[in-house]
Length: 218
Image 1: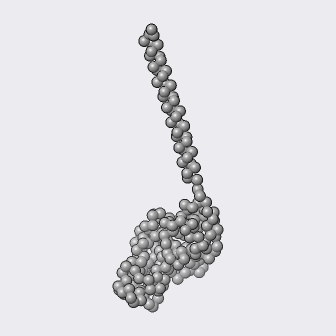
Image 2: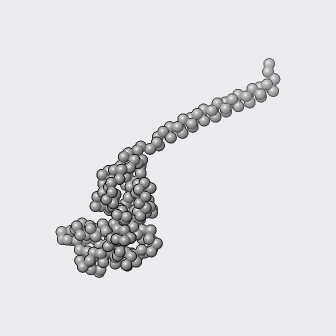
């Protein structure tokens, strides 16, 4: 008949062996899960061909790459800013096929063959776009972080008004859209300036719009 001491040793041995077996099984499962996870996140690459500021570009990109990251990280066009990265501040605004969009909210692969215009494509220090010159003249910026998006959006807004595209404040949808401060403020509302240079931005856009504009119209 076994003595109590022998039984204690056997119980401890069994418990230790069981714990070791569980640990080995858990480690194996964890290793397998890690391997599966690593395989599941391998990037899918695609050749993206776009025209950026008048130049053809062809890049091999992870299909998850945003248009903004393509411009900034791959083409080194850093004028378009990454502000909120949620489509709420407008600092990343660019024009794609004639339409202004938030480049942080769209994937580069979605614009295969598209025409992209960034702040770098509007003008140069020696040959400023009229909107750039007007922003400087009217001090339409302070820290300047949002300014590229504001200028690109401003150019697009004047194009929208000229084309007769209505906004939420357009009173008569059957008549030509009238240039007004209300139209500017409504259309530019997606571009946030935390420095508060809004009135100067309106003045700059009004000057570029020319004789057709009336500051207090509407």
